[in-house]
Length: 222
Image (tube, rainbow, N blue to C red; front, side):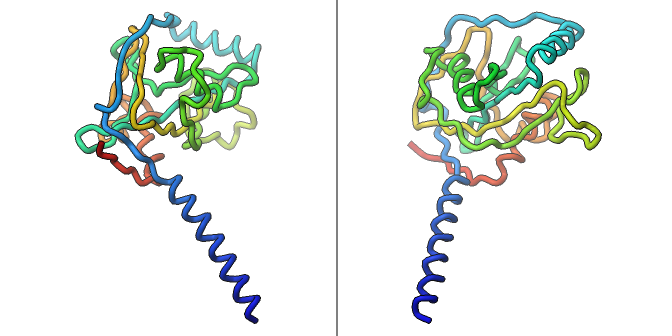
């Protein structure tokens, strides 16, 4: 009887240990925007194309490589005691999460670190420890060449043809340098402004606050 009781206690202790670990991962520490340095570097090239050109490019890419996978980062900072989401603005109009398309055979984590270094670091090669890529928060699918992205696959779609976009939480250290191409703007946007603001930010970015609702966000004073 005693041994059995001790076994139950040991099992309960193990469960509690796992619970504590899970609770820790469900917390996000964010630091004031003033902790970070922002600079600029040479502009990066963008494809200047029409919608027709873009659809043709997606079709040719699918024929050559199959399903395209993109990875994007959810990065938070604190400003005015409120969580803010870091977004890149292109041509003073389009808002994007930092990230981009994976190379063939590249892992999600390696690809996201490479894209973050290219768009947010002085050294484009970066090093693998520079970005703490955490859990995948959600996945979005473009199942046809002319449709919008959806957070699910329609039941009649057996194999998506075009694109899968994965969102990852990226935790920032207490300080770091952000070096951004001159033709991009890095903005800190309040989560309350982003929430369900489809018209301005599109379906993926405007859905980020809901994806973050499972986390306790801790504002760290420095």
